[in-house]
Length: 377
Image 1 (cartoon, rainbow, N blue to C red):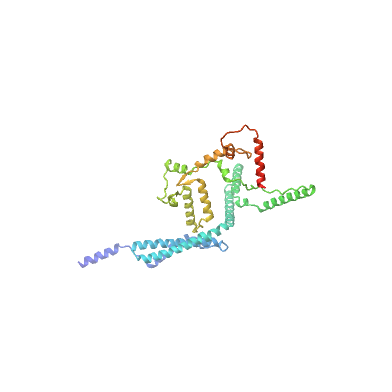
Image 2: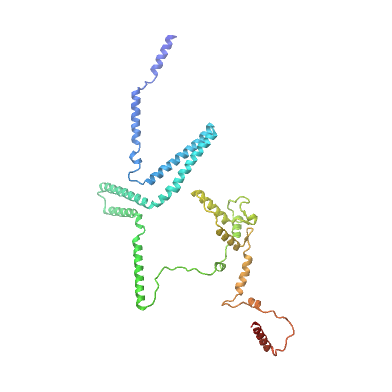
């Protein structure tokens, strides 16, 4: 049995593959590492340039820190759920990371973004110049290669190549060429000053005052805005809401029951007021600011406008008084003359009774007038 066991062991060892030595393994690892290192990008290209814009580098660093904090927070939540660690400790760590996220977000939104908008023109100009330089080098390289390979082409093909190169040059025109030219404004100002000087000289010669020419300006008017708007029919808010809610088949979001009731149930918020509140909330949450509340003057102005609109209980009663105003406008005469209705109201009250023959009425009228004058003295 021992001899059979030894024979089987020798057979098994003969069939096993030859093991590699440690030196060969290290050589293979070194060669693989060198090949992988050659595929990596140049470290000098990843580092920030010496004369670059520090604001953009700072923005990248802050954004990278923001992403790292966000990944760490997600990892903390996953670990707390998976391993069931201490909830208080995980919650505390999550709160600290959230504060750091808010800090990075404030840096990006309130610090980097305004500064970036201020230097946007300079950044675009520098980037465009670099792109134009790279494009010019590529065009030169392509032109050299084409001149070597296409040395025996026809004249027609040369003409087409020239046309295509002209089109590429037109497309590569710098957009900064269309920037505002301050010299044009200075020239216009000097021309207007010369015209005013000539006008003043002419006024001195003939003694007639000529005011300087200025841009036309609409002067304020004393006419009430209600008279202007009365001729133009206004849209009914109730009718618009009825059409959008009852006659439309599209799905729509409805507010919570009771959230639109104001003033103790006497009024309801319209769609316009709800949209304004939603816009205000979205602006505050996006920009991390709190808008000022409505002042007393603005509140009084809005209340007066609502009263003018005739809204009560969510309904519009403005049309009840419009018909009366319309009748008064139609019966009123132009030129300051009183209408028939106003004349009837100015008549004195006359009692019905026996009337005389008319003899001596003028004398009696004159006598009463004289008595009134004597009584006043």
